[in-house]
Image 1 (cartoon, rainbow, N blue to C red):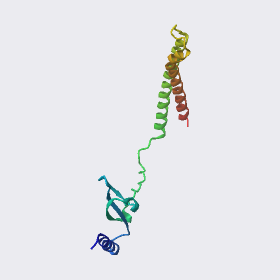
Image 2: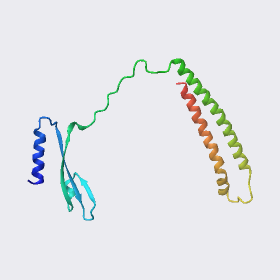
Image 3: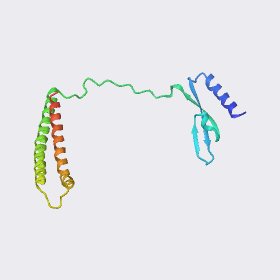
Length: 161
């Protein structure tokens, strides 16, 4: 009996079996090319010019796993009370306001350092590009602190929602 005949008999047995569910029959080819590299494909046209062995696979149609059903949260599930929520919000606001004050101080310091550096002109810096290069880290620092301040202000504004 040829491989094809054996596969056909096997397919008939599976399909006529009373216990069998609907199945999907897949044909795969195990191919070896001229350089000895092995590939497995389900496309017949990919087998051209290669030494291939045909494999037939039966996959039950209902083989896909079912997602777990979500169980509802129990009535006594730990939820924060209104008092706890208000306390947490006030604590968060307090922390953000402290960070805002610190960030404002760091921004003032960064601006002061930038102003000091802008006032300094050495004789070596005849090229304005060198001046800009020297000032770049100070300007970047000011920009970072300004962005942090804006972000903190947005967070504080979002707390009131």
